Length: 213
Image 1 (cartoon, rainbow, N blue to C red):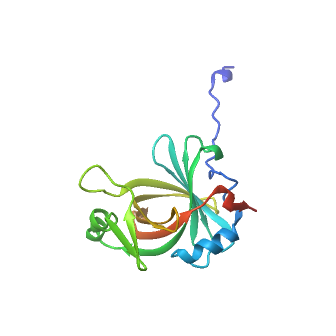
Image 2: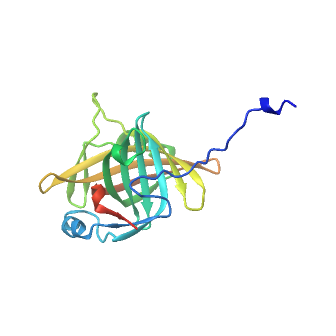
């Protein structure tokens, strides 16, 4: 007789965020004209025109700032920086990033060296290019930026990865930039640390460069 006093609980579905029409399991085309002109200047080579989204990552940098990553079958991801609600009008930056190198880190000493020495450098050298560190602190050192990425996979599973990142850039042409990022990544798998050092490179996109299929 007192059922009306019971609180109703609703299950809130935890689903991958969508923006710009990008979604888990979706696909998009890149602007072939832009890619034809810009790709010869970049480290990446042979970017696929059509790409399928295999996973979606989300990083909450602070209460107002979110990074979304749409991982594709072309060994890269579209990264979207959003300030405020996850709406198209709040997008501040879009990049297409590609994986350049991944190295496993086996020991605690090597992990500490990566965090304290290898990830944050004044300059990063890749394939004859010099990239300059972007995220500078006010002190004498600029430690990697710590973040946690929540990743939604096509099979319905969700994982979390702790990341320690530093962004680098180099200018080419008129106000064009290529970016490189070093990330120390750490997961707990079977109660053990799984760690690696990941290098990605990429460049700026405009929302109009992406055609949703």
